[in-house]
Image 1 (tube, helix red, strand yellow):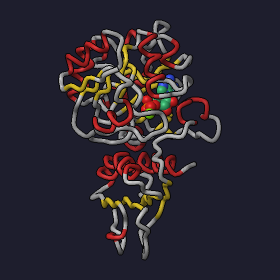
Image 2: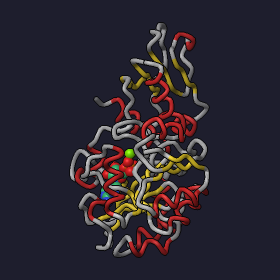
Image 3: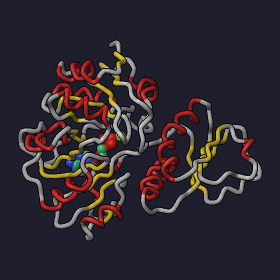
Length: 315
Ligand code: AMP
Ligand code: MG
């Protein structure tokens, strides 16, 4: 299959209407979209990514009127979070409408719904005229793509179209919040932080994936976000020697930055989050063996950043 690369949301949307897959930019990472009501198209998403079929997809919408066809009911908590955070990097898990094909939600009776705030994503979704399922547009197990070139490296020849945009602003996947229970539970940390959610609904808490909340988000059992290189978390970078097949990313410069094969010193946590996945990919291309990632405080966006780094560091 020849993959069309375009900057036109309307051209890209035609692929969706013809049952093909389109990678498109959002504020989090690039998504791989298909018409949620076209079972064959949704199946292609799992095939193109090599994604396990028990890992549910997130539905993307351009306005609230599209919610009706996806969910059975907006709970009061969900309503509050929608008012504050939609459009934006937040996915809400709600009970699904029976009309949504089971394949899209991996057989679950719930569905994750998000309204991206990115203008190109919005134009594309509006032109599609249907809600679009979209996991990250990478091969399963690889770091999520934050540039259209990263998408091309993984999926060229496997999908219908790539809608070109800039490097994504956030760089980490959306915050996923389960709104089906008595209080909201954060299943995956992201750019909408726990602290921000608690300002709206104080009883919001992080999922305890080790214990009772484990089955809630099937995708979290898979190894994610991983480069081929080994990832090691470090605190203050006191390297006195480094080998020429090692790399470093963090907020503080190590004493001898010159001896790393690749190095990226980020001005703040936002830049660190934005750059992480692309840095992982660059390190793989350069044949780096070990990537040292400096730890940051697990507060605000730092919680999501450390979640991705620790997952990448888990073999
Ligand atoms: P990705 O689309 O690759 O960013 O991954 C989507 C994430 O959202 C995975 O961790 C899924 O397990 C999670 N997710 C999607 N839909 C649901 C749902 N209905 N219930 C719980 N988690 C979900
Ligand atoms: Mg993903």
